[in-house]
Length: 169
Image 1 (cartoon, rainbow, N blue to C red):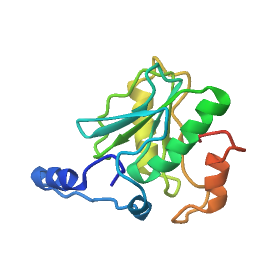
Image 2 (image 1 turned 45 degrees about the vertical axis):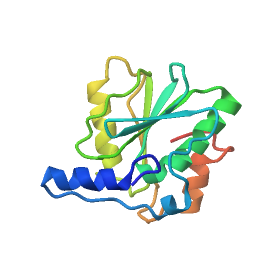
Image 3 (image 1 turned 45 degrees about the horizontal axis):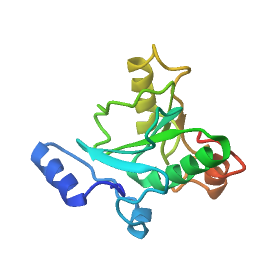
């Protein structure tokens, strides 16, 4: 689920694939309006991929599943206003296989809320690193909580996303 994708369309696509699929349902999304992004960002959804962006080349791209999108958008807005760092958020409707074209940026971060080790984020960060090695300034890190808990502890969320942390990952 994501705040940018119509659930009926997502379920229709899943059933049409005629193969095993899983719908990840993040309860936080029930409290959020659909298709909402904070100003000054714009939203575009094409081919099952949502993009929250500004009309300029981003300094970095953040790839995240739908449940993490509200948290990432808040961090992106803070980075823009406080540090003048331009970010683009990419939220794929289908998490696997990851076959998303990314905007041109020298830094790509993968953010998810799960336990460390062998996760979707680690796999996506590895694929991005392999595909875009020539243009990236550094490997694409994956950000996960330090302890195996679900949901992640508030201390991790505040450290990674708060104004004082000033970092995405």
